[in-house]
Image 1: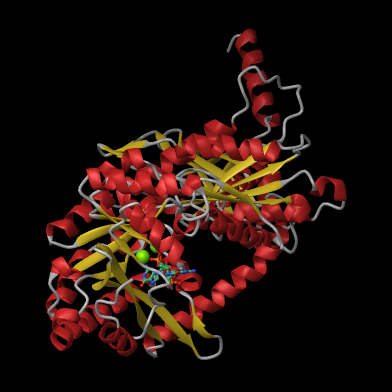
Image 2 (image 1 turned 180 degrees about the vertical axis):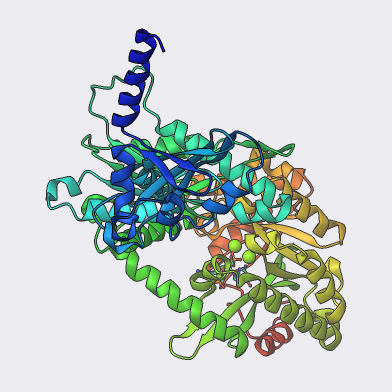
Amino acid sequence: MQPDTDNAYEALIQFLYRAPIGLVQIRLDGTIEMLNPMSASLLIPLAKDGNLENLFYVLATVAPLLCSMATHFAAPTGVICESLRVDLGAIAAIESGPQFLSISLLKLDANRLMAVLGDATFEMQREQETLARRLNSAARTDALTQMPNRRAVQEQIGFMMARPNAAAHGEFAVLFMNFDRFRQINDTLGNAAGDQLLTEMAERMRAALRPPSNHTALASSPSQMAARIGGDEFVVVLDGMRRPGGVESVARRLLEAIGKPYRISGHEISCKVSMGIVLGAEASGDADAVLRDASIAMAQAKRDGGGRYTLFEASMRELAARRGDIECDLRRALQENQLFVLYQPVVGLLKEGRIDHSVGVEALVRWQHPIHGVVSPLEFIQIAEECGLIGAVGDFVLSKACSDFVQWQSELGAIAPRLLAVNLSRAQLAQPGWIDTVIKILQSSGMHAQHLQLEVTESLAAQDQQVQARLHELKALGIKLALDDFGTGYSSLASLHLLPVDTVKIDRSFVSQGDTSHHHRILIEATVKVARSLGMDTVAEGIETQAQAAVVRQLKCDKGQGYLFSKPLAAAALVQWLTATQETIC
Ligand code: C2E
Ligand code: MG
Ligand code: MG
């Protein structure tokens, strides 16, 4: 060998000797021929009695297959195994040394192998940490929207509540959002469309919270977390809100962004959002308590018509508890027949000085509560809607009223009421298969569809295409429709022609002032005229005095209803009333 080549070879040997990886040259049977200090230090803790004669023996307990892998490797040279990770954790003697060994085995020629050993402890720890981080973040992420989930929100609120600085309490807020008709969309368009809607909503939420592009990184900005905590429930947690009114301006921005129509599977969907807000200063209890308070305020926003936000107040908690009691008792009421129906007569006003007492009746539900006595529908109908009991309540009223009506017709003949009005609620119309239930009730009671009038409120009737389609289906059956409480909602005479109704019921709040307020008289008159021009008739609700009756009659209202004529009556009392009042001169 030339001197230069000798030097280079010597340098290589020196390098391999000092290299920070373990190198071991062995024979095919594992007998060690050469090893560098690094490999000796890695192997000593594994070697019984410090014996480093055979690599396969040394590694027998931690890598038992190494020997057979080498024996069965047929090629003359090549890689037998690469970066095989061996767990040394079970070997007591190496508690302070490497926990994982990485082993590569190369065949150099027909007689020799080279093992490359390394300490893989750090690498393995890093991998395990990455995996744990990934699992951890999956446990805090909603799979559909990739937003933080309930757990992440709970942690964030818990963190904010635990801060000792009382002033910081005033700077956070929890905004709880729920979509007003999400279940209906899921039921009618399918779950995939529902998922798409949620994903788009999440995106709009993120965009609404993003700081404007001219926002510099230096400006101190509040922190914001938008999360999906279940079904159609989203939560935004704001922190560092120092500006007065800042929370409410974020709330308005969110409601506006999410409330705009969506285009899903070829359908345009309008989906209002209701929001409940707990301000840090009002927050108490743990994270779950704060979320529950925010959802109580959200439910209030929904009851107030939806598409709005409501700030939580402590008094709402008691109300929510009462609603919870009513819900629980109502389930029992249905099973134990505590509900019953009263009938309020509707009279004809325009029969040449006479009142026609047989025009119709309106069925009004009541609840005989074992402790609270008779409960008004105003207290429980909305709760029944929210907790899914309205279907059962509504079906009970409809079938009881239809069978009573048919009985009066056969018993009373000419003096029997000619029309039966039954109130409908929004949730009934949304129930799949509800039209079939109506048909069944008509058939089983023997009621003719043209004698039935279903009453809906304006906000319900004007709602959306699906509700309108349902109303048209009812009309196609021959059932009449009335617009109840006209004048209370966003009543608009201009859009009356868009609604498929036969009758407009003018709300008591107008009628009760008809004789004292010129303004209300004008409104009643305009309603009667527009309704007439559209071929609809009118009913004045809540007539309590002769003066009110005189006004609505003068303004050509077709029918009237109110305590002046009769309060709502039980079926038997109604029969007596009809018999006693026939053709009374007014
Ligand atoms: P509504 O359909 O507008 O019914 C008329 C309400 O006005 C009834 O109250 C009736 O008792 C009351 N009323 C009638 N005349 C007068 C009057 O001269 N003065 C006063 N102060 N009140 C009068 P009620 O029975 O408490 O029902 C309240 C509301 O509850 C109803 O308003 C209706 O929206 C709803 N409701 C009643 N029964 C049912 C039902 O079976 N299903 C559904 N979905 N809603 C119902
Ligand atoms: Mg009504
Ligand atoms: Mg009404």
